[in-house]
Length: 127
Image (cartoon, rainbow, N blue to C red; front, side, top):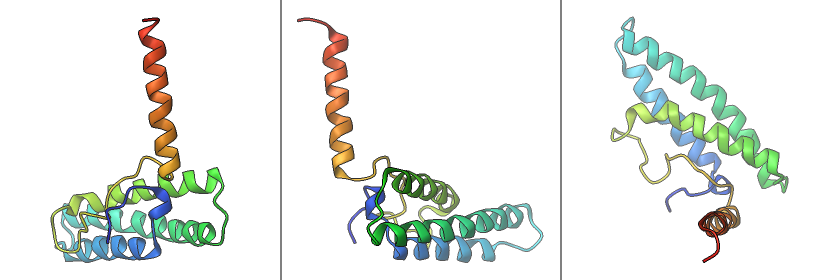
C-alpha cells in the first residue's frame, strides 16, 4: 500500500491496523508493571480515537467532506499515531501508513505551498 500522505487517504483498514498494533503490544506488557499501566492507557485512548476516526471515515466516504469533518479526522488520526508511535519498528507497525498527516488532501498541500512562496516573496520586499 502507498505511503499515507493526506487525511483523505486514511481508511478503516488503517484504523484497524493501528488498533491491532497497539492492542498486541499493550497486552504483551507484564501485568502490573509501569510499562503495562502506560500501555493500557494508550490502548484505552487508541480505542476511543479509533471509534471516532472510523465514524469520520465513513461519513467522509458518504460524501460529507466538509472542512470540519476533515480537520477532525486529521487531528484524531495524528493523536492515534501518538498512541502507536512507542512501538515504531516493532511487529505490526506499518512504516508506510502509521504517520501523521499535515494536509487534508493534495490540493490543500499545493495551496499551502503556494501561499508560503507568496509570503516569502512579500517578506523579501521589492527586488
